Length: 249
Image (tube, rainbow, N blue to C red):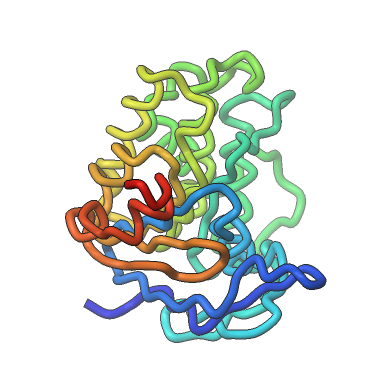
C-alpha cells in the first residue's frame, strides 16, 4: 500500500525553541498510525503543522502526493482531511444534529440551483447528518443541545462531525483525554470500527489504547523522532522505555 500522508523533514521553531526538529514519517493508506511521546515531545505541534494551524519552519507535508504545506485549516476538509482536538470542539448552544449539519454542509457537492433554501432542505445534507449520528450511536439525541451530552457522548459527536465531512484521513488528537474508564473503552471500541475504513493518525497518552489499536507507532522525544515500528517493537525498545520512565527503566 502507498502512503496517503507523508511528513518530510518537518521542523517548527518558536523563537529559540525547536518544538519539532526534522521529523519524517509516512502513514500508509488504510492503517492506524499512532504518534506518542512524553508531554512536550512536539506531537500536537506536528499535528498543527499538518493541518495548517501553524506554519512549519522547514520541511514539506504531502497528502495523496499533493503538497499541502501551509494550506489553511479550512481548505483541508474539501481534500478529505478531518481532525479532532484534545478539547471537545463542538458548538454547545446548537443541537447535536446542527453541529453535524455544519460539517456536512461545508463538504457538500456544489450544484447549480437556488441560492437561498431552508437549511433542512439542502440536498443530501440531511441524509449525511442522520447517517453520521447513527454511526456513532447518537441518533436518539439529534435534537438535544450539544451542551447537555455527557463528556463521552460529546467525544462521539466530535467523531460524527469529522465523519460528516466524508474524509479519507482522520487526525485524532487524544480522543480519550478526560474520559472515565468506561467512556474510554467505548471510544476505543468505536475507533476500532473505523480501522481499515479510514486512514487514521492518532495522538494518545494511554499506552493500552495505543498498543491495542495501532498498526504502526512513531515515538517523538524533545521534538525529534526517537523510534518507529509495530506496537511489539515499540514496547520492547529500550530507548522508548528510557524516554518514558528514565534511565533506571
